[in-house]
Image 1 (spheres, rainbow, N blue to C red):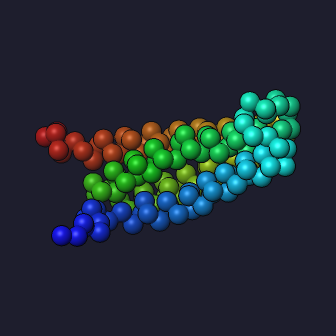
Image 2: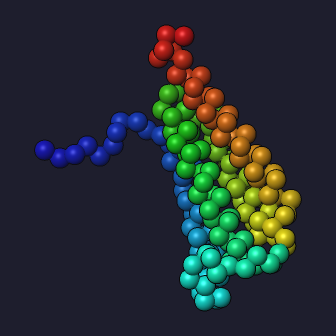
Image 3: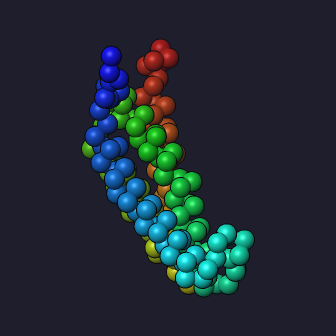
Length: 146
């Protein structure tokens, strides 16, 4: 007996945005490796705290992405699998892509780690994640008889 190939839950919107978010994460990860090789830095404890340390900026951009995007995609999958509007979900995840790029490339990667994109990306991501969580909860109210 062969294993099923899908779970039976088509998630085309979540799947669509998993690609650009994953590709961007790979770019962030590549920056860290490139800076580690260029500076012969093997572990993060060797990072300096100067206002222009590209390795520190790359590490923080990658880590912050990894701290936020997986939860957003999980929540998007929950919303999508529970019948949330695919169009609205696509807008939310499109905004998330833009916010994460702003946070890293126009925020942390700028001189002093304080480009305009950092607060915009931070607060915007928090809004998207909180909104997706609320939407997922709202879509589940029927299950609980509410």
